[in-house]
Image (cartoon, rainbow, N blue to C red; front, side, top):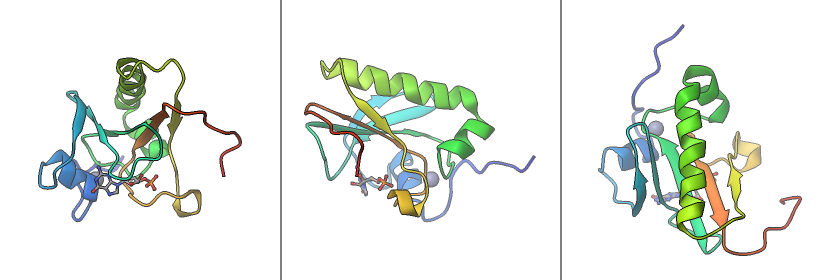
Amino acid sequence: MSEIPASAPDCLFCRIVAREIPATAVKDGDRVLAFQDVNPQAPTHVLVIPRAHHRDVGALAAADPATLADLVSMAAAVAADAGEDSYRLVFNTGERSGQSVFHVHGHVLAGRPLSWPSG
Ligand code: 5GP
Ligand code: ZN
């Protein structure tokens, strides 16, 4: 099995983990952290990421399922802390899905009606 790098050069979210780029933290854990999306699409729009670099949710699941479980639990806690009993957890995966940052992140969206299917 290949080594998983702890961080990747020029990765925006690795730089947020390293505090080289500021972000508004919402929750902080050993392996995952949550911060406000800079361009919110709902009253609650928080990104939850692993501290270690993995390009997408499938890669994280394969390499470190325990951290993926931490990420999902933190997403649920973010919604609960915001007083939301309904939320959407989205992992855009691949360019055609809209993924623009290739460090896995779950979008926690809540606080307004969310239509389905998504666009
Ligand atoms: P994606 O399109 O990859 O699913 O989501 C990337 C998300 O990262 C977008 O919702 C975008 O608003 C957010 N984003 C991009 N750059 C920054 C940044 O510098 N800081 C924060 N907090 N969010 C960012
Ligand atoms: Zn990264």
